[in-house]
Image 1 (cartoon, rainbow, N blue to C red):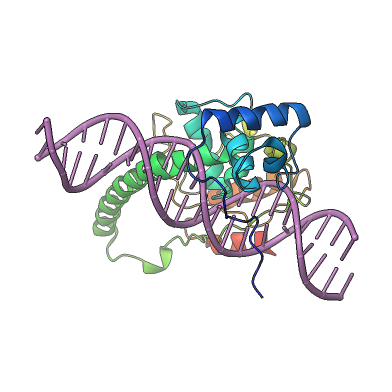
Image 2 (cartoon, rainbow, N blue to C red):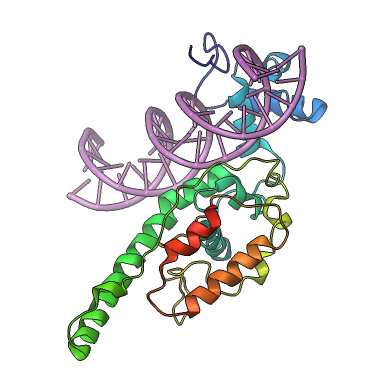
Length: 241
DNA sequence: AATAGCCGCAACCGCGGGTCA
DNA sequence: CTGACCCGCGGTTGCGGCTAT
């Protein structure tokens, strides 16, 4: 028994929104408020799926939405938040006023991920050369010294057990206080540019405990200060318990 | 000028969690 | 307890504009 479709597709408009549709939706929401997406299209006189209306409103028509020109500061914040949260775009968006999760997701996929990939490649090359040189100086290489970074798959976060879209991350932790790299490979060069963000510390479950994240960061930071061969799996696994 | 390829972004889709009858 | 429904999320698609050839 399959899941029923969210709405009947028959006779509904799809594709780009027209000005008239935008106006109808905006006027309806201004008068009646958000929510009740299922019944909204009919009441607003729109031949659209409720999901489509919600998406259009949230990503485009909502007031106070900033469009285009993501600043370098915002980019850096996105990179850091992504290294912390993984692909939790709604959480990342909650930390960037006026930005939508869709916009951030698109920007990440089309710009930042490629840029980081390039930087990672460059960094890896440099590290390879350094390691080669080091091995030559120290004799044979030590294969057990490899740092292992675990990439847990991001999971959906319940709004109740977590946070709301609007206040989201503010209620958990003040990232303005984060003056250390968010993950092992999210290191900065002498120009304070993020060199690499590949080794994501993806946290699979975040409690509402006020100090939990800060404790985790502190623990993580201490780990990083320890010997190079720390197996990050151990720490990450501890987060997953 | 034509067109192929690329890129950015808006929109769609499927899934999972929460709620409620 | 169960199942239907609603909502929101992340992944993916497809279209339009831009650029290179």
